[in-house]
Image (tube, rainbow, N blue to C red; front, side, top):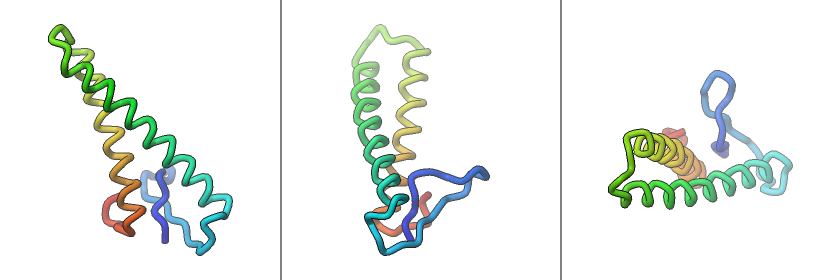
Length: 89
């Protein structure tokens, strides 16, 4: 069972049961994961810039931290899915 990089409408994890990595849903999940990882790289660079800016205000810091937390959650979901750890969706 593959943990997908999104949740259902109820917020619960979604899983894919297939042995075909080329299936439509497998390919879609791969594309979503790639986009999430690329976004995380951008968020990391932006957060680092805010942290290194001594003039960054509370709004900038809060925004950077919020986005970093969102991205970290997505990256952890991807890692859990790739390592078969369904405990960490």
